Image 1 (cartoon, each protein chain N blue to C red):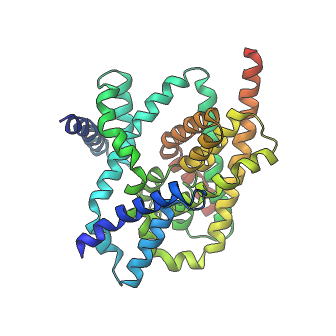
Image 2 (cartoon, rainbow over the protein chains, first blue to last red):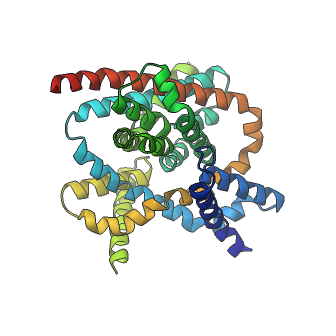
Image 3 (tube, chains in turn purple, green):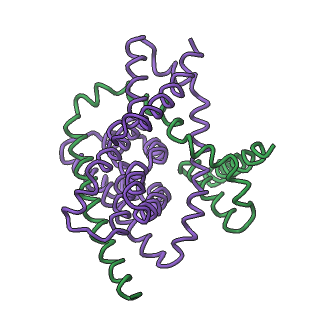
Amino acid sequence: MSLLLIVLSPICFFVFKWLQTHYLKHSLCNPILLSISLISLVLIWGDISYAQFAEVNTPFFWLLDLAIVALAIPLYKESRTIKKATWRYILCSVIGVASSSIIAMLTAYSLGASEQLVVSLAPNAVTTPIAIEVSEQLAGISALSAVVVICVGIFGAVIGLPLLRFFGVKHVPSQGLALGAACHAVGTARAIEVDERMGAFASVSLVLSAILTPLLLPVIYTLLSLIFTT
Amino acid sequence: MKYIFSLIILLSALGIAHGLLFLLDFKFPPAVLAMGVLLLALKLNIVSLKKCEVAGNLLLKYFPLFFIPAGVGIIQHLDLIKENLFLIIFSVLAATIGTLFIVGKVASLLFASNDKEQS
């Protein structure tokens, strides 16, 4: 039983990944989202508790931590390319982190969401592993953040570029920065597909928001909750 | 052997981050701090990019696989999601569209002028 539970994630992931590269090329067929959905169904049908599944899969949680550390590698590479005009990139990223979290939190608060839900929705634009960490730190539901983030990425990959053109953003680097800031890795992957230069800017935006979100979000959240509770 | 050495570098960064947070009694995601520690070590040439990349690139390649089990945790909160489905979709859509618009506009403003200066 334990063996079955631990091989479930890799099997689903590799099968869906293979299907996506060969047959289902559309961004909507995201292998991570499909894997999460299928495994969730298996657990529900098999009447297996999440606690049991998580315990067996502990090694994946360790690897997740290690992979976050490894994010320093692309970060280091990008830091060499953005030496020029660094502050402009940082400013864009700060604005991206602030707008994505503030808009989500304000909307959720005004629609009457609970504190826990508001926190879980706040890190919606950052790459999934960071969203999981930040959400957990602020006592949110990290699994909800993960799923929300992946859905945001898929939405952005499908409709992000047409939307940016509709808004009149025609400058290619700016399109890349916006996609990276709002739709993290999935948006970045789409940007790379369309235009290599756009992809490069999207990944700069992606890595910057990976550092800035854990730094800024607790501050933004504290300020907003002060305003809303008084 | 290369892999083990590379893993040791990543694990040490994680260890240092955990130690720092424990000593400073500060709440922050340890893995993110460890990423900062490793970045600093790369910048200061304490560790070489090549050595980190051996295990690092492998981990990065299969990154999505590692957060599938975390995402499956969603099944514990299905009722909460059902009750708040509209709220969740609406807030997140507003945030994504708003961010695309704001960052797109700001970046055009900041970088378009930069391009003109250069030309």
